[in-house]
Length: 160
Image 1: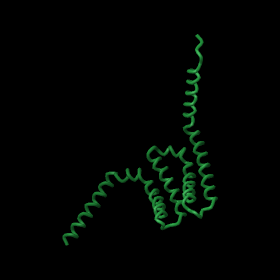
Image 2: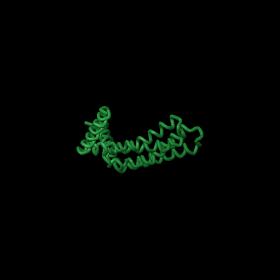
Image 3: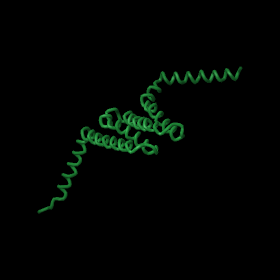
Image 4: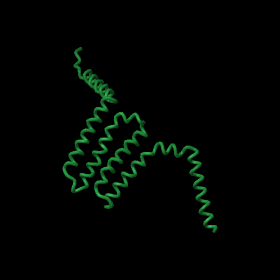
Protein backbone atom coordinates (compact mmCIF):
# COMPACT_ATOMS: atom_id res chain seq x y z
CA UNK A 1 0.00 0.00 0.00
CA UNK A 2 2.89 2.40 0.70
CA UNK A 3 4.19 2.01 -2.88
CA UNK A 4 0.77 3.04 -4.19
CA UNK A 5 0.74 6.08 -1.86
CA UNK A 6 4.18 7.05 -3.15
CA UNK A 7 2.99 6.95 -6.78
CA UNK A 8 -0.17 8.91 -6.01
CA UNK A 9 1.88 11.46 -4.07
CA UNK A 10 4.25 11.96 -7.01
CA UNK A 11 1.29 12.30 -9.36
CA UNK A 12 -0.33 14.95 -7.13
CA UNK A 13 2.95 16.91 -6.91
CA UNK A 14 3.34 16.71 -10.69
CA UNK A 15 -0.19 18.03 -11.21
CA UNK A 16 0.46 20.83 -8.71
CA UNK A 17 3.68 21.86 -10.52
CA UNK A 18 1.86 21.90 -13.86
CA UNK A 19 -0.97 23.99 -12.38
CA UNK A 20 1.53 26.40 -10.80
CA UNK A 21 3.44 26.82 -14.06
CA UNK A 22 0.13 27.43 -15.81
CA UNK A 23 -0.80 30.15 -13.30
CA UNK A 24 2.61 31.78 -13.79
CA UNK A 25 1.99 32.00 -17.55
CA UNK A 26 4.72 29.59 -18.66
CA UNK A 27 2.38 27.57 -20.84
CA UNK A 28 0.76 30.58 -22.46
CA UNK A 29 4.20 31.90 -23.43
CA UNK A 30 5.36 28.53 -24.77
CA UNK A 31 1.98 27.89 -26.37
CA UNK A 32 2.06 31.27 -28.08
CA UNK A 33 5.53 30.61 -29.45
CA UNK A 34 5.53 26.88 -30.10
CA UNK A 35 2.01 26.17 -31.38
CA UNK A 36 3.32 25.40 -34.92
CA UNK A 37 4.72 22.19 -33.42
CA UNK A 38 1.14 20.88 -33.53
CA UNK A 39 1.22 21.37 -37.31
CA UNK A 40 4.78 20.08 -37.70
CA UNK A 41 4.22 16.83 -35.80
CA UNK A 42 1.53 15.36 -38.09
CA UNK A 43 3.70 16.21 -41.11
CA UNK A 44 6.69 14.47 -39.58
CA UNK A 45 4.50 11.51 -38.57
CA UNK A 46 3.25 11.20 -42.18
CA UNK A 47 6.85 11.10 -43.39
CA UNK A 48 7.83 8.60 -40.71
CA UNK A 49 4.90 6.32 -41.53
CA UNK A 50 5.73 6.40 -45.23
CA UNK A 51 9.43 5.67 -44.72
CA UNK A 52 8.48 2.91 -42.26
CA UNK A 53 6.44 1.38 -45.10
CA UNK A 54 3.22 1.63 -43.09
CA UNK A 55 1.35 4.08 -45.35
CA UNK A 56 1.48 4.66 -49.13
CA UNK A 57 3.36 7.53 -50.78
CA UNK A 58 0.20 9.62 -50.99
CA UNK A 59 0.71 10.72 -47.36
CA UNK A 60 3.81 12.63 -48.44
CA UNK A 61 1.62 15.32 -50.02
CA UNK A 62 -0.09 16.43 -46.79
CA UNK A 63 3.17 15.73 -44.93
CA UNK A 64 5.13 18.13 -47.12
CA UNK A 65 2.37 20.73 -46.93
CA UNK A 66 2.19 20.59 -43.12
CA UNK A 67 5.96 20.75 -42.64
CA UNK A 68 6.26 23.73 -45.00
CA UNK A 69 3.38 25.61 -43.35
CA UNK A 70 4.72 24.97 -39.85
CA UNK A 71 8.12 26.39 -40.84
CA UNK A 72 6.39 29.51 -42.15
CA UNK A 73 4.43 29.85 -38.91
CA UNK A 74 7.60 29.41 -36.81
CA UNK A 75 9.24 32.18 -38.86
CA UNK A 76 6.27 34.47 -38.27
CA UNK A 77 6.20 33.69 -34.54
CA UNK A 78 9.85 34.66 -34.25
CA UNK A 79 10.04 37.67 -36.61
CA UNK A 80 6.46 38.92 -36.40
CA UNK A 81 3.31 38.28 -38.35
CA UNK A 82 3.97 41.24 -40.62
CA UNK A 83 6.31 38.88 -42.46
CA UNK A 84 3.24 37.11 -43.80
CA UNK A 85 2.83 40.03 -46.22
CA UNK A 86 5.65 38.53 -48.27
CA UNK A 87 5.52 34.90 -47.09
CA UNK A 88 1.98 34.17 -48.27
CA UNK A 89 3.20 32.49 -51.50
CA UNK A 90 4.59 29.81 -49.20
CA UNK A 91 1.08 28.36 -49.05
CA UNK A 92 1.35 27.60 -52.77
CA UNK A 93 4.93 26.39 -52.30
CA UNK A 94 3.81 23.93 -49.59
CA UNK A 95 1.57 22.16 -52.08
CA UNK A 96 4.46 22.12 -54.58
CA UNK A 97 6.71 20.52 -51.94
CA UNK A 98 4.15 17.83 -51.18
CA UNK A 99 3.63 17.01 -54.86
CA UNK A 100 7.36 16.95 -55.51
CA UNK A 101 7.89 14.51 -52.65
CA UNK A 102 5.18 12.30 -54.14
CA UNK A 103 6.94 12.42 -57.51
CA UNK A 104 10.30 11.73 -55.91
CA UNK A 105 9.31 8.72 -53.81
CA UNK A 106 6.43 7.12 -55.73
CA UNK A 107 7.48 5.07 -58.75
CA UNK A 108 3.92 5.04 -60.05
CA UNK A 109 3.36 8.80 -59.94
CA UNK A 110 2.85 10.14 -63.43
CA UNK A 111 4.62 13.03 -65.07
CA UNK A 112 1.60 15.18 -64.31
CA UNK A 113 2.55 15.22 -60.62
CA UNK A 114 6.02 16.54 -61.41
CA UNK A 115 4.62 19.08 -63.87
CA UNK A 116 2.08 20.32 -61.34
CA UNK A 117 4.77 20.59 -58.65
CA UNK A 118 7.04 22.62 -60.93
CA UNK A 119 4.23 24.92 -62.10
CA UNK A 120 3.19 25.60 -58.51
CA UNK A 121 6.80 26.16 -57.44
CA UNK A 122 7.34 28.59 -60.32
CA UNK A 123 4.09 30.39 -59.56
CA UNK A 124 5.11 30.61 -55.93
CA UNK A 125 8.53 32.03 -56.88
CA UNK A 126 6.89 34.68 -59.07
CA UNK A 127 4.54 35.67 -56.25
CA UNK A 128 7.45 35.72 -53.77
CA UNK A 129 9.34 38.08 -56.08
CA UNK A 130 6.30 40.33 -56.53
CA UNK A 131 5.57 40.37 -52.81
CA UNK A 132 9.20 41.19 -52.08
CA UNK A 133 9.20 43.99 -54.64
CA UNK A 134 6.05 45.53 -53.17
CA UNK A 135 7.11 45.24 -49.52
CA UNK A 136 10.89 45.40 -49.25
CA UNK A 137 11.83 46.00 -52.86
CA UNK A 138 12.07 49.76 -52.48
CA UNK A 139 15.04 49.28 -50.15
CA UNK A 140 16.70 47.08 -52.76
CA UNK A 141 16.12 49.73 -55.41
CA UNK A 142 17.55 52.42 -53.11
CA UNK A 143 20.62 50.29 -52.47
CA UNK A 144 21.19 49.68 -56.20
CA UNK A 145 20.81 53.40 -56.96
CA UNK A 146 23.36 54.31 -54.29
CA UNK A 147 25.85 51.69 -55.48
CA UNK A 148 25.49 52.77 -59.12
CA UNK A 149 25.81 56.45 -58.13
CA UNK A 150 28.94 55.84 -56.08
CA UNK A 151 30.34 53.73 -58.92
CA UNK A 152 29.76 56.52 -61.43
CA UNK A 153 31.37 59.09 -59.15
CA UNK A 154 34.41 56.90 -58.46
CA UNK A 155 35.08 55.98 -62.09
CA UNK A 156 34.89 59.53 -63.42
CA UNK A 157 38.17 60.69 -64.93
CA UNK A 158 39.79 63.52 -63.12
CA UNK A 159 40.55 66.43 -65.38
CA UNK A 160 42.52 68.90 -63.31
